[in-house]
Amino acid sequence: MLPTVDFFGTKVTRMIVGDNPFHANSYIPDIHPGAEMFEYYNEENVLKALDHAWECGYNTVLALGSDFMLEVLRKHRAKGGQMNIIFQTYPPADFYENVKKLVEFKPLGIYHQGTTFDELYENENFDEIKKRLSFIHSFGIKAAIGTHVPERALHAEEEDWGADFYVLCLHNTRIRGYGRQSSFITGKPKELIFYAEDRAVMFDAIQKIQKPVIAFKIFSGGQMFRGKTEEEASLQAYHAIEETYRNIKPSDLCAIGVFQRDKDQLKENAEFVKQVLLK
Image 1 (cartoon, rainbow, N blue to C red):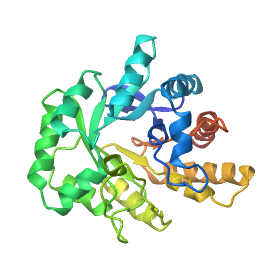
Image 2: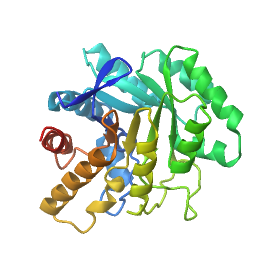
Image 3: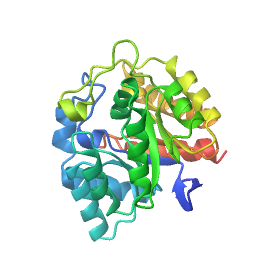
């Protein structure tokens, strides 16, 4: 198993499996269009990816609470799969009805999806945010806030809105005119550019938040690999993983999505995590 940390009483690997590619959510359509991911990641191949992740040493998936993913996870568990689950709420569904479905899986936690949190925040609908976290807590499950904006996580923590942990993007997609609805709602991919200078700002916020954090967009949605050879991309991935663990707390995790069609990214990333954390 990969190195672990105590996550509210459960040993969770410090790298967990993200699932954006499972839902054909690509930020590098010039390299891997979403249509390619959609074609590859049918139910069977997602199940294979979860099984292989377990073989590579991961023990947790950060899963979107979509009907597709819920069915995959039911089948994963029915055949003896042991992956822990931390859920992201699914924006097209009614929040409260969606959470009721997610709690049936006894997840380690449920986090409020980032873009919809940011929309509520921008409309100053803070009471609704607190109400939603409280609703998750009513089932005895840890609740979290996801956001792309460092200052918003710090604000929520300073005023104690009820988050037990945070799921934070290393790139601020709510600035530079990108404050739009989630692609899960619109059904259309966002054409985002991730800027390297955002990373240090979010790392600083992560250090200030004493509660556990799951950092994501470690590879800038794959954009840092543009123009790189396969060897150069692997080296870039190693350095990004090393940078992340150097700048987050020992109690924190990171999540990385993978596209397994052409390369065993699960295995490569796992090897890099061991090289970095077991030095």
